[in-house]
Length: 270
Image (cartoon, rainbow, N blue to C red; front, side):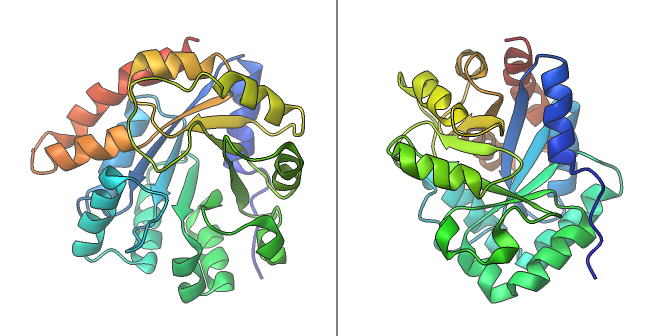
């Protein structure tokens, strides 16, 4: 029988954020990039930089929603032998020292191959707080994925999502809504979409869940702009890109702290 935590760490985070009238900073990295042994230390570095929640990408050989930077990160992780089971072992290592909320960012194929029940059981056993399945629409999800009581079901909403569809997606979600700020795949951008603020406001009309905005945010100015409209800022490709560049450096973790901290501060101070 599954044992569920009394309060999910994601829910607790956003309750605390709301109390402080602040914003959450969410960081993404690929689990196992550049090797599985690096990831716990990189998560610790992100936490040291002030990150509030970490998304761990489950490396997959066909990541259709990812741009070249995240594809390369996933390939490095796969080349290093990272598997779905290995990701859960990484989470276990992280949980020996950290209580930071963790979300697994994945496609459905690896979950299906691993086994849905087994996957959810291992999420709860190891301390995963939420799952973001990029390619599983709500109407095709089983009961396990409908606001599962032990693991938050994070959902994506795109700039092109119709309002009626927003309502359906929000109703099947828990934890927070991930708003994709632009069309296309992941990757760093020079500016934040001009429609972002209006779209976040539209989503908020259909749900009480926090809205976090990602895809393309790569500097403090962009993080600050997003934080003025949303409850959370997500930065991924910019971090994965630095990991790829600095992967052989002995001070990789301290470099990540120095790179991420200004963006965290910008989001928190907005």
